Length: 112
Image: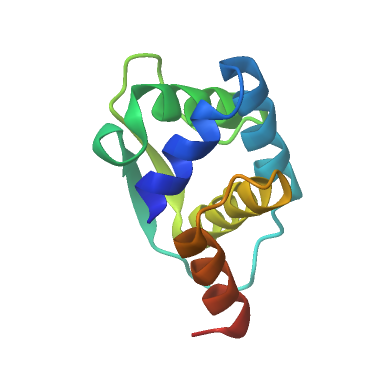
């Protein structure tokens, strides 16, 4: 589902607008107390453009040691969930979400 959402959002807008959307999602994140695992978002999941855009968004807010050409971006699990939710919300509010994306969002909202 994550890959489907990332690819759908990327197709829905120019790359510079995608970087702005990701930057806004990162900036709106409020860290929860406690430990969150460090995860990697790989090219295989979000595509080369997705990694590039996320790395650029992280660089804009000084969150990452990402370098152009890296095949992944390291991110804490809670921030990854927040970005995922922001991308889902973009698809839903733009009326571009598939039924599966809408169902997944509802399940997340209900804590299922």
